[in-house]
Image (cartoon, rainbow, N blue to C red; front, top):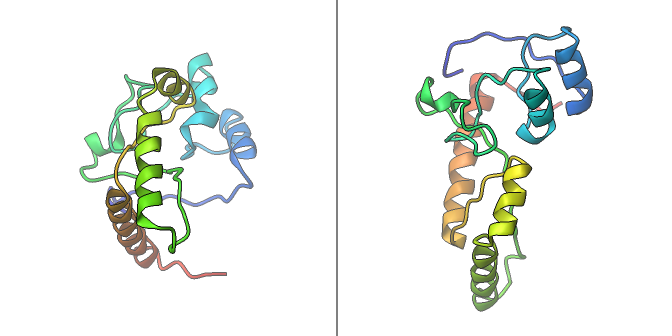
Length: 150
């Protein structure tokens, strides 16, 4: 949408079949999670063109973020920790403090980098802003592409 590129969407049931077809030349490009593709990049079976995160990945520091040449582009997957809405604020604060502290652990940082992960420490309000921003961004994509639930 942002680059004006017209592509045909080919649905797959996961990274495995899609990566097999990409390596086999059945499809020309695939937007994959970094972790499933990383070994294929390192062995030269696939060539990374860009990462969809807002910044370059520590796992592939020489590969540009797409946002470097398509200004404002960012599409990331996040794994988060949540609690029910009635969880006392003191508990939420304690969990947030402990999780942010854990994210400073160098062994955890190394392991997450090996898995092509990026750390995003922050507050519950930071997370709320992220959810609101992501909801708005993807609502625009759904509208632009005229997507409808099946």
